[in-house]
Image (cartoon, rainbow, N blue to C red):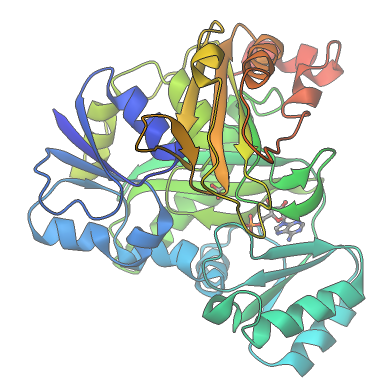
Length: 410
Ligand code: AMP
Ligand code: GLY
């Protein structure tokens, strides 16, 4: 089978890497026109929201990725909240506003933490979570006037702040059925100890000890399956990944967001653990006939994102990168290229905010993590920033919940 992976980031590199075990893979950074393939796998959200899957399907192509109708789940948080409400899926209470005064009134009626989101796409950076109501009010103002996120922020969603650990459950859907992949945990904040601004993701790991099969089943039953059914009622034939970003609250898992594609960097830690033929599995979903039950190897996977100077506000680019070959010589390590490209001299250069995903498999999260950081030590570029605490709490020896649930880990 020949598979075309659309998109130029680390997630797409990971997809291509794992698909290449069983298929011939070509990559298209943006527009796949002119590439003849048996299956098209669309990585990023923007082309999905813009209707690329619809266009390819209208040409008779087999496509993994929802049409523009389903992609609205990620393209509009207001619409997503409406679908969740109609489907009875647990989520944070919210209000949507395009005027400042009622927005501020609603905000002041809530308790901390305060959560302000852009309605539209903002590359994972449009969410403010703060303990300060004044900061939240300022953020509402700058989003509504279009100063901080352009048109994506002219409507804001204000949410009740939830507390608890987060979890990403990615489910592969064929329009009617959703099958979950091994769960992962992403680290969204720029700084160690979960401080600083939200980013697209600074690292991830899988498995997640406290997310055994029972929890995943609960997420599918209470969130993913009802959402897919609600989409069906709206005549949306959703074929692709439905990614539930969850908060594990004291009242059970609640959906923070849906994404309509593989997570980045979750894909980098979930896909290397996939035990079967990924190309055949995604082709089944794309064709509307999912029969494969996905299985995962016991090894754990950890990825550490190396980001450019200035990320997430801006990104310094054009800097030479050294040490990737040495990094990949560490056992179990693969370095996925996100914002990195080969320059005229053949050397790797920085071209984006998240530059490299240093990814390691290991017998457990601790070993995978040690390998990933040993590999990171070989790599350098000007202004490189990364978190030193990716998967740290999951790898700490003697954590009681790790020991307790080890036998049900995915
Ligand atoms: P989102 O893009 O909607 O997933 O939001 C990005 C990040 O903001 C999430 O991963 C959470 O860390 C945080 N967040 C989003 N919504 C809430 C909420 N209602 N309460 C607390 N934190 C939130
Ligand atoms: N890791 C977060 C995302 O893919 O949106």
